[in-house]
Length: 300
View (spheres, one colour):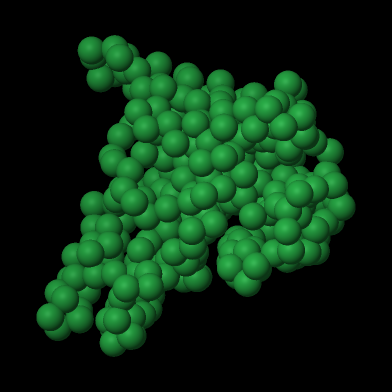
């Protein structure tokens, strides 16, 4: 095996793979992954999740917290089939990459029965990150809405508000996309999420919007709104919960405007990816509680 997706008639029966990718930290990759996973589960899809960031392990720690909450509270929470793929410690590069490839392939093979697989990648370049990107049916890149973060996509002349050259990360995405196309797979559907930062001035927001439009046309990605800076995201993340779980908690008070706005942002993400076009137990948006899907209990 060469470690990259291959063409085949069985492709339609394989999971739809969504990669969270960005080589800059602090952009909300893991937070986006968590809410996407729980939203898909709440909609009745079967979901697998893979954490390729073995060093940080943020997604894996979240799943541990979620399982612990379920066990502590005695409640059942929908859980994905989760795997954590560690980096190899082999001293020789070829051996290290072969070991990592086998670990990743084993994790993905275990999820063949899932409808979706959501993969969180490291915030730096690595063989595992490149390998994960090559399997992306949809690549989701959260990006803070500031000039400091645009350079993950391209070199930009901030003074002239001009795009100069694509970034190393963008070139890597192009390379993995070409590998997919050569093997007969569909091109990567690249979706960039503009996370809203409250401290960014209105003029800068307009300038950033203009640059992002330039980048989308030149680099080849779609733009969509991301998440705002909401306390509820951070508070619930550390409990292993999301705002989508609150409607199913018996002691939960009526949702606040912040909760509703957060749920609307998650719906926007699902719509941008095209989730509602796929079959599940329900295809209705999740601003309101949806019928309970088949679920995995805390001990399952």
